[in-house]
Length: 269
Image (cartoon, rainbow, N blue to C red):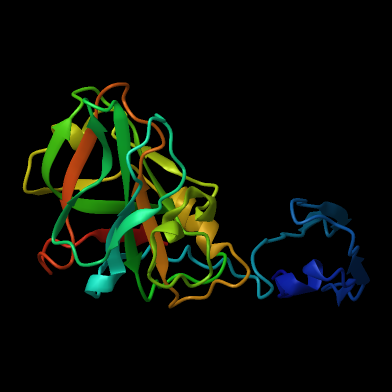
């Protein structure tokens, strides 16, 4: 009969020298410098080899199972948690700030950029969407995230002009209250392009349109040192540039129109 000794994995983890007495009464030790990956066979006793087996795992010698992924869908909770801001008409085909037209009580709203062909000027509209009680610990790995908006129409440029999704870069963002809160300088570094393939423009009206994966945007927020589970995130939908001498404006439902078709945020952690 062989002699066996159970050796907890944490003994090796912490570099403890292991001693034992074999069936012949000989004292043996296993060098604490041996690697987890080693399988060491040494010494011959009664014509048989001693076999040391090493197992890796947690400090108790166990390998915990991979925790299951959890997907949660968040919706807008109140009328003040979604809205828009805009610029005045301007000649520039680029934009990073908003000065007027703030509202959090629209039922449906066009976002993007409008073009005045008489004055050859552009007006930009950005939307915001605040989602509360986000269940993600500080530093949690975001596996995926998607923003879904209920599209009711689209006017303007027929090409695949890009819109963008970012977030207001804060630990626990309150709902915006003035147009300048949506200035691009307040956004996360991470942003995701949406509609470069025409996904919004060509989607059927009166249906939800789902964004590309925006996990990098959500990850930047939950990685903030001051973030904690239960905090709020405000996402923004905006354009950086206008189609030359044209416009691109999808129309979406907001909370004040319907509590069924409100913007949605789906996060998997």
